[in-house]
Each structure stands twice: as structure tokens, then as C-alpha cells.
Length: 64
Image: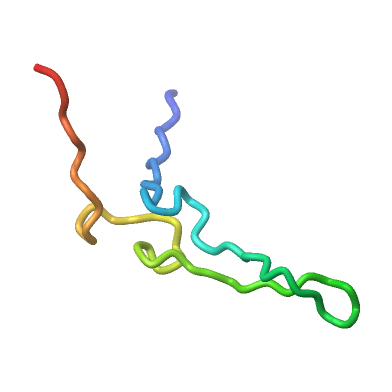
């Protein structure tokens, strides 16, 4: 029997699947660890995926 193909998840075009990142501020805590600021993708709101109905851009056709 053939195996069903799993549904492909659409990655967010803005964050490319990395919805939350931590940016180093350049300062350190007293224990020596770096101080970071978490930043969440504005387009997907931290999910990493986008639904076509939610405003992701339509595919662009080029050529003939």
C-alpha cells in the first residue's frame, strides 16, 4: 500500500520559519551571561507559518 504524503507546511516568507529570535544587546548580567531581547515575527505572530487566507503573498508567475 502506498503511504499518504504529509501536508506541506507553509513557512512564513518574512521569518523563513524562525518566528522568535533573541538579539544580543551587548551588555552582560552580573553572572556573565549575555543580556538578550526576544523579538517575534510581526507577520506570523510567532507561529512560523502563514495561511494563504491570512494575507500571505500569492505566487508570482514569471516568463511566458
